[in-house]
Amino acid sequence: MPELRRDVITGAWTVIAPERARRPVRAVAPPLGEGPCPLCPGNETMTPHEIFAIRRRDSSSAEGWNTRVVPNPRPALRVEGELGREAVGVHDFMRGIGAHEIIVDTPRHAVRLAELSPLEVEFLLSSAQARLRDLSGDIRLLHGAVFKDERDFARLGHSHTQLIALPFIPAAMEKELSGAKRYFEFRERCVYCDVMKQEIRDRERIVSINERVVVLCPYASPHPFTVWLIPTSHQCRYEFASRECIRDVAHALTSVASKMKRGLDADALTFTIHNAPLRTAPLPEYHWHLEMRPLLDADDGISGSAGFSINPTPPEEAARFLKTLNGAVS
Image 1 (tube, rainbow, N blue to C red):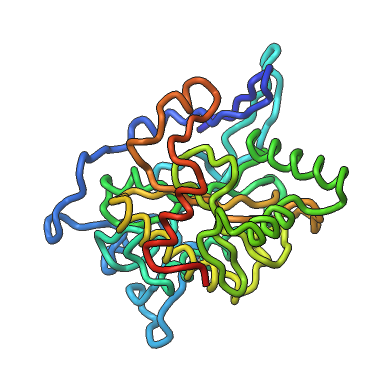
Image 2 (image 1 turned 135 degrees about the horizontal axis):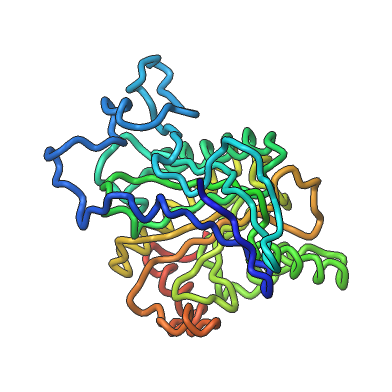
């Protein structure tokens, strides 16, 4: 059983999951046609039971899906049991209770995020939304994290996104919520709405705009070519985003991912959805958004090890470069 341990100084929780260390690792994905992929259609019995799926209208078979969600076969957290929070001397301990799920982005094998269609991305984002809504009914769980990291692509060779529901709010998220609240208490406005309005006015760091989503490179980007996809309509929880908003996010994400692949030769991308905690009442100070970036050699190693970031690409240059790949801001 995984454990949750809390740092007595920083307050940050860490998942201790020794089972994850024993998972098989493959240096490269098996070539097409060599060896079955557990995430491909026809191999559904190779994964744990299906939790959720979006199927084609003309199909009721197990194989006729556009996206499907299954439990991670080697989960960092497990849904069974009680938290059992207790003190261990000066430390805090909880059992590793939570949910760890895999969203299979597409039936197609060996395609990365930058190669997915807007409709495929819409399906995966809608699946994530449906799962967050369902998991919010479990009062043990406080936060849902949806993320993709394509450094893991080589292990399976099949595009997938991960969802982890936690019985605590991560320290980074608490810091983000606190910063947004401080700004709201001082100015009585959402900081994300204000940032978006200023960036639209200045245009320097805007990558694209559609009806419901603004794509921008944040002013203090910690990594090269970091982008935020921010809904134009204020909402703190992704679970309640409209179908139209998710569709526009999917189109914007697909466009930016394609630009990063073409312009930066970036095969590996990562994204995460920044979202208010589960079951949170509407917050006037917080605004959900999606953060994405390419995984580049130019990302300075000092950033992680020293506790601060060195970004060699100013966000103004990053936005300008991404815009030139297919014209000006619409």
